[in-house]
Length: 112
Length: 112
Picture 1: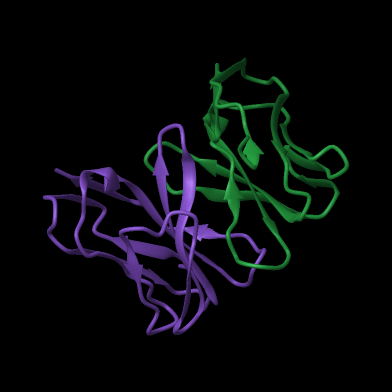
Picture 2 (picture 1 turned 60 degrees about the vertical axis):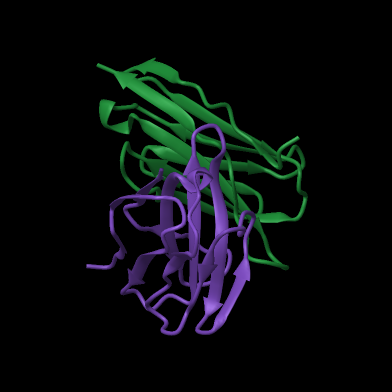
């Protein structure tokens, strides 16, 4: 089944404790992105990647890191999480720019 | 002014009604237009994808793009309770960085 998977689905952590949210897609897509979704603000792109070893900032990259060492994986790293990063996070993949995106199921992160 | 404006609703309609969902935008460079449906606690899923202007129909769903007015619409015919969800419009430009811009989403409730 073609899909985007994320882990963990739910995470509660404390300020400053480094964490990684994994994302994997099995559709051989070139493009992958990370978004956060907040009430009243909608979906905002954090980082995107156009291919292996090619990443770039989205609208709200501060406090986040990403890497793309393999085509299928695109982890999101929070080196020192803060409460304002409490949000619902989505990973997405797309076959090419401008095309439809396939979203993962989401990761709900709470930073206390 | 946000680049993409979308009324958050909620929009409540009886089963069988024709639903009209809309977004306006300000960036004339947008060429790709998409509608996503998001059920509660799920990731967005692509409903309709249109390049440039015109209409596109898929079953009960019709997407319209009017680039001269910077206005896009999604029509749902014979609405069903299972259509109850949040509908997100999204759009992106053909060149430059790959950062799709999403509307905040419209919450739709179809009651039996």
